[in-house]
Image (cartoon, rainbow, N blue to C red):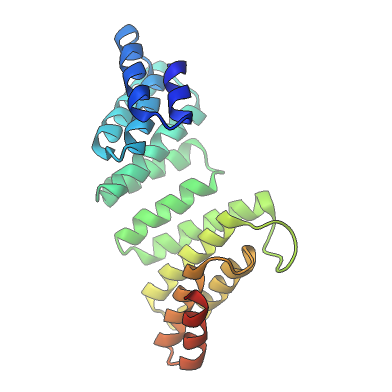
Length: 220
């Protein structure tokens, strides 16, 4: 297995698969080997094969009593890759289990929000993004414009929440979405064109054409 992991770190995914195949031939009950082979498949964009290995790893981890952190990694990757192949419903199920295994991981809450977003469950997605933001802030602090290192993940979570608010389209959602995009911009010093583009769309929907034009120009 370790040779396969070295191959993965070097970007040699086909070679990694060959080593994992050998490892599985010696130990068919190792959740860890199936998990890492699943990661190698995903790196090769062979998502269905990766999902199959993650499911095998999940089954083995349940029977072997693996620690919550190991289960979390398996469940998280299952959820992410099921969404990639268009199965947002099952993705939500596994991501919910990942959060049960490790409740303090902002990445899991954000990915749950992405799958809920795919299902157009705006309220649920917004709540998941809010959870991701809360947990990330507890680790890196709040957005402080002009000071401190960039906070890429916090920016991402604010951006995602803004998108869900925009699509929900409630009475106060546009105002809150604009505030979230500003936080996304401030968190990384305005280096992501997507934040400006998304905020421009909110301004455009509010008929605030000059502000929309300015954001679209910045995004370009």
